Image 1 (tube, one colour):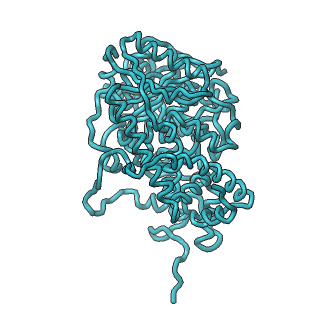
Image 2 (image 1 turned 180 degrees about the horizontal axis):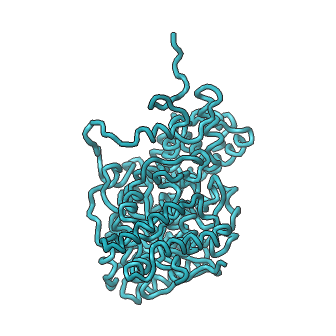
Image 3 (image 1 turned 120 degrees about the horizontal axis):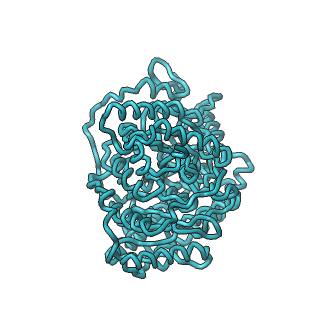
Length: 486
Length: 97
């Protein structure tokens, strides 16, 4: 059988159980695809072929012996290079960690390892997850499989691009201000930003600790529902994970959406946005209506302030989180001179332009005399944005919005203008500030480029956004469209 | 808000970043532009609004203050650029008197 790499997680699971193919064959097809296409896409930083094939063989041996196995067992996953993986280089796409090999697993990685997953390797991203195009990688940019001249989105661009090119069965990413949702939309795959606290961040390099989340990319929402069950829940090593029940997502998504109330916020349909993007969202709304949902116009009046608040809060937390990269305990260390020059030289050489820029903004905003005007003010605006959503969710079950103002743009188009790049996040940031969950599913094209829709839900109500996304995928085929790469 | 090159140098010193002259000039312009955009935050009266620092509703998650064996102490120390006898080795911070 050829091209097993193209299967969804549930298809791969069924095929393995029916003995149609082995995990080694499935894994080998993924590596064959990587070797065939990654010269063009440039998604992978590190391949994990030896360990992956050993993990696959371990599955095959257990399956042959009739052992009971997890649905995730034997199935290859693509991992963003921000998750620590025991014995496997983990760089966060930063030169300062170019040679870092962690001696422990991130919580999500440990959970997947315990389930018997196959780790294909580590993929590219914006350095320390700072960016929206993967051009801020300290190593090389990744390209969009739908158009190699365009960005895959970011920061989890490697995850989305590799999955869209069928180099694996599903992928892991992180989302702070849109880093799963934007690349999912740009690359035509499904992606979930979980509610803040739903999935442990232990062992994932911190960027903006009050906003960082972890989530899956997959070829269908059904797959996401299955994965989430295994990675969600309380972790004593991440004190921001509350003890909230983990739902049976795979069951919940089977319910139809008759009578469900879907909010359409007027602030998300702004002048200057791409007509294709706007039309795809409105068509999806119409589809939801046909499916029995009720579309309700709503207002989220503080939307326009969210980007400004985010780009204060994020750099402030970045300036603090990046202090650990000081050349003392791990990473690049320029040991030529006194303590201060080790700090200065290691950071000058190891950190990229966007990371330095955010450290600078954050340091300034937190410095004496500016705290109230910037950081405190931003946290107050955050309250207003959160309250907007709390109010809206009194009247609706989910909120439907665009993901980004336009589809994937060309490499180099925005990299010279950081503010322009920040404004790309205008539709993803508000939900981040409120800690909500948000699902992106493919919903068509704008001039041959994929366009996703964003379905926002209440905190810890992943089951409802997944249900809406899955029901939508039962009556549409957009998620089955594939880029033409050869 | 226009940041001067001196202000950029001061921030860089606080953040332990060494910038080239070209970087200083570039950041002075870019940071000024970004901070100008942030001025829109000032257009809203927030005097009666409580700040939100996080949204979990959790406070003071603590555990027993006791040491646990990670089992990977040697491996962690081995990640350091320099180590000696199971300790991370760093340059002198204080001079002996």
